[in-house]
Length: 438
Image (cartoon, rainbow, N blue to C red; front, top):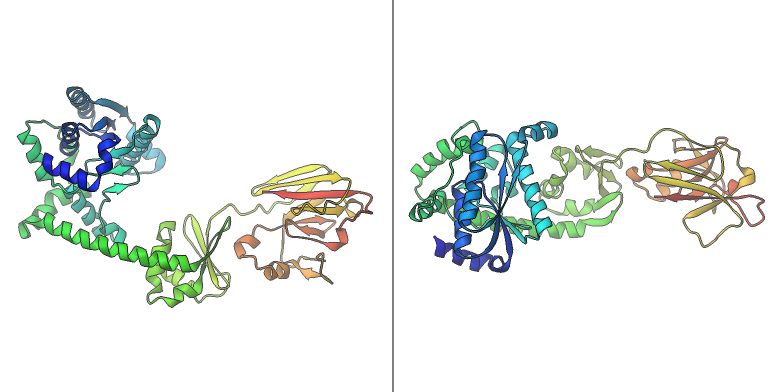
């Protein structure tokens, strides 16, 4: 196996030979094998071991074993003890998910602090099969059926081509001991149930199960590459704008493809959406229709779908401005109000108001249906709603709009247009400058 492992690294991960590597070592069969293989190849490695405090004395014995293993191979070792149950309770996670989160967070902290280039974990072919079956049983898209990636950012899994049987044979032939985790015997966890009860039956049916599975996985990954290429091409054509309000997608591009449902799913699945039929119906819906996830909203706005993060809506409270100068802070920025000596035509973000026409206190509030004003540069009056529609703001953008009022009259639509009744000029006896700072 050592020669096979060496050839595998040379073929797939030659960069590991010259890198500083952090090995995730529990003390179990697979991680002990990974440690010995790396030591045999004289790679530049250190060990990281997590004590999750879940199995009392057994967890402590695992930690002692890993420290002794590191000392016997003259490898630097780092250990960390976690209160996993408390972390799980505080973050509303299962024990397994809490342990996973704690483990990988600490590995990344170590890698960053101590300049490790890569983190190596000891996942093997049997882990790959079990993960596939778990995702298959839970219901998943193509991504869930393509297995554990061999490399994901700075995490590398060099044992994926090897079976548990290969690894055990290697350690036994080398007279190397390892620790058995008693929790791996319990079938209350789905992975263990599959490992002990389902996979053995599948291997009875097909003794070459792992080889067949590797072939299937390879085909699925090829298909996934084609799908990703197609998705990226559609996304490139569909995305028309990316700004602080979100990402805008042309509806027409989704209508051109043969199966828009599939493209919509793959495009938006990472944003927490589940109501896929509703999202499909957005393509032909009227402007204003929305579909929500816990974190995002997908909005039909004329001929685009606007994907936005759910943000706190601008407060409905009315801000009172009782003096000048003044700074008013609100969730999405602040309004700077000051008195100046002259209108500055070279200040595009500021508005200049004739102070003599204002009556304190001023009010800053969200615009309302029925509001109207007399926009600078236009004749007559105009409803605020019509003005916002004419400048083609999305519903998300409209929801953030504030107006400044004096005795009920709109002085300006903040950051957009001044009311000509209040516009200052060089003859104004008092000039008030207002500027929105986001």
